[in-house]
Figure 1 (tube, rainbow, N blue to C red):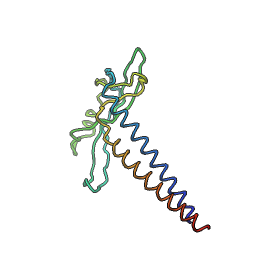
Figure 2: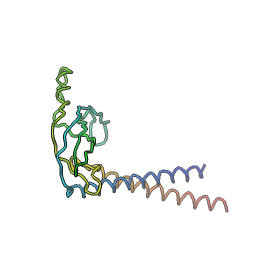
Figure 3: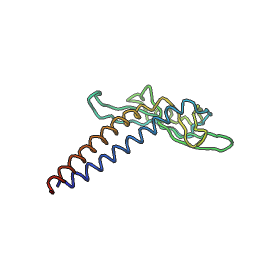
Figure 4: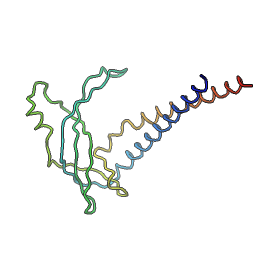
Length: 164
């Protein structure tokens, strides 16, 4: 039973380390992308999507809306496509006819500026300031990795003492 606890805590520690690493990567991209060159992109598909947010300690929950877009851009004569989710400041009216909602979201041909990584133009950022989840992932990943690693050490020493 204790050995299973060691394995579980080891897996959780590894998961925490992975979340930490992903958070660091996203934070680094966030910081670097502010200095990346920009190019104009054309939206080729767009739709408004409703996402549900569960109630939590700091929010009452509810629905948020995002505009999911696919866009095309060119760098040095090469064309790339990418996807992004943009915040929607005003949700669609509740009793709107479906035809009006589809015209709100289907704005192909609209143009926007994007930032691309000069060393890898496939990596693109629409809003560089959107990396709010990165610090949370760094903190949560570090806490999970440290706490689970301490449990692994405690369980191993307990196993060693019990085996002697």
